[in-house]
Amino acid sequence: MANDYIIGDMVELSEFPQLAVKYNVQGVPKIIINEENSLVGSITEMEFAQAVLKAIGK
Amino acid sequence: MGIISEKDREQLVKTLKPLANNVRIITFTQEFECENCKITRNLIKEVSELSDQISFETHDFVKERDLAKNYGVDKIPATILLGDRDYGIRFFGVPAGYEFTTFIEDILLISRRDSGLPKEVLTELSKVDQPVHIQVMISPT
Image (cartoon, rainbow over the protein chains, first blue to last red):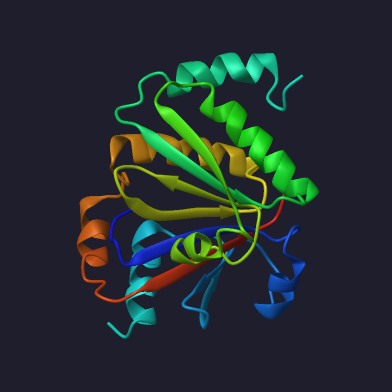
């Protein structure tokens, strides 16, 4: 909601187990940003925003 | 007999009462419906009936392939929450259990047209100038 460039999906892994394999999910919540960057566990909103910026090289 | 219990229904009606603005919900399913697609469609329909300000429509993932693609829907069941525009919020799978709470909270945020994030976080996010696809992988609790 904060930026129109950002799309956020919630993915229920029990219904899409192939994605758990694809992204090597061993713990949840696991966050994947633009396919290649990942974060596991709970983080603050600011840490998350910074991870998003890092993913696009900022 | 609905999916949402009578007790939960009463609570939800109270929670959703002060909707600031209309919320539109779209669910993608298909003609030959998977079990979870059916559950999702029925669940969202029940949620939409809790408030006059929530509209609900279903689309066919197979027959409306282009529309699905426009919304970035590559698997079903998929549920999209919209306000006056697309805020980029999608749920893949049944938004049940703990996710149901998130789902209801998202309806409230969209109705307010406000993410509720602190100002400094919004400042950071305003720097995003190219598409970002975030996938939060969760499992039922």
